[in-house]
Structures are given as C-alpha cells and as structure tokens.
Image (cartoon, rainbow, N blue to C red; front, side, top):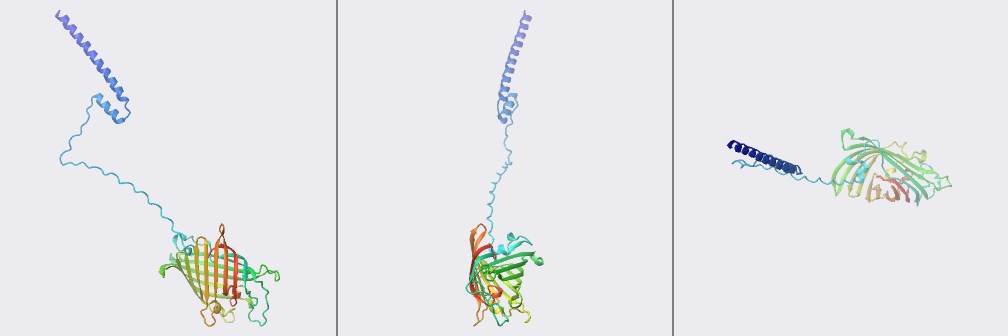
Length: 355
C-alpha cells in the first residue's frame, strides 16, 4: 500500500512540475514577443536583457581622487565674413592701369585721348592765309562750318620695364582731321590732318600733396606733324614729363615739355613755342557718366602773352554712345593754326573717353 501511495505522489509532483514549467515557458514567449515590438533600439535591448535574466551593470562610485573630465562643447562655428565690396578704380587707374586690378597685359588697344566725331564745328575766324614764306597770301575760301574727327589709341608694349613692377612702356597714336565737308566751292577737302605718334614710360607713384594723391609720372617723346610740304608744312618734336594727380572724381594732369631743337633749314615753325608755350595743364572731372575737361596753355610771356583754352563735355546719349560738346579759344587748335587765334564750337558724339 505504502509503495502504491509513494508512486502516486511522484506522479502527481511530476505532473505539477510539468504544468508549472509549461506556464513559465508560456510567460517567457509572451515577454519575448513584447520586447520585439519595442521600436527604440536601447529600450528593446534592455527588455531582452531583463527577460533573459542578464544583470544590468550599475554605475559604481567614483574612486576618491579621480575626477570626471567633461569634454568641452565644440565652439560655435563663426559665420563666414561678408565679402568685401569691390574697390572702384579711379579714372586715372583705369586709363594707365595703375592698380593690379586694372592691369590687362600687353599688346591690347586702349583709348588714349578722346575719340570723337563733330559733324558740326563752327569757327568765328577760319585761317584762310596759312602760307609762310610767300609775299602773296591766297585766300583758301574756307567755310566757317566744318567737321572734325579725332581717333586716338595706345598699346602697352612692355609691362614691368627693367624688372620694375611700377614701370610700363606704352606707344600712342593720335590723328585729328578737319574737314570742309559742307564747302562745295572747293570740293569739300580735308583742310588739315595732324599725326601724333608718341612713346611713354609710365611710372606708378603714391604720395600726397595738397590733398591730391600723386598716381604717376609719365616720361614721353612725341612727334607731331601735318604731313604737308613747302609753305604748309608744320612739325615739331618734344620730350615731356607728365604728372598725374587725383582727388575723388577730379584728375589733374601737369605736363611741361622741351622742344628738341632743329636746324634752321629744317625747321618749319621756329616760333611755335611763342604760341603753344612750354607745357599744358588739364583738369578732368567725372560725375556718373558725365565727364568735363579743361585744357590750358600759355607761353607766360609779357607783353606777347598767348595761350589757349579748350573745354569738353561728354554725356550719356544712347547705350555706350555719348554726346560731345567742345569749345576752343586761342592759338593752336591745329598745327596749321599754331599762330592763328580763333574761337570754335563743336557738337557731336564721343566714341571713347581719354585723357
């Protein structure tokens, strides 16, 4: 009997253990499935550790004498500085490429002096008797109204002469023609054309004087002639030094010159300095797209004081084309007129500006 009851107890304990084990397995499956539904990686991993019975590491006390070093927060990224506004180049800098930003290299054509066409040019006293060395002065029959054309360019032949960054060598050429376009009586001829090639060594400077900034010194050699013969021939050769200053929108150009002497038999106009003097002074003022210039000459002699004044004004007309107004008074508007005084007024268009 005792053995039968002992066997029955063992069977009952086995069945009870199996039931409890099955309940434990069923509970574990539910918990595992619950962990798998967690989306956050850290929380899902902690759930798996809890269900599997893995112990979580606890933060222990910090040993005495040890310090916790906190990494410094990265410094805030500084905002990029705003780009600087480009410096506007002055008229002198653009014309002679005085600043590094203005340089364009050698062998490119640039304007030299003003390029313009005046279809209307009125003179109060045309030079009808320009002949020299003749007793009889025939009247040329010139009209007071004519046209004038000037074309002028320069080319940089060498940048950095003698290895000096501040010195450039230029070659310039200017042609000015006076045309009796409305004079049908004498078949509308070109009454005078002047040719003016020159060579210029431009040296950049930077100094202050009387509120003006000295920008350059040009050393030049220039030949000017009208290409005619006998009594109508006019020519001379000069060397000069031109000093360029600027202040805001105002440019000041001072150019003294020295005439290279010629033999008495070859000199077409030995007294030309008595009328055209020994230099000139030019003021150029620009405001917006308007440009105003004043040219002065004087021989500084008394009582035979002679000189000339030329005023130019260019203004916007259409696109890059500008209107051009010119006034002249005095001696030497052209070489044939070097010893003839007159006043003239011209109206036309400017193609490019110059100095």
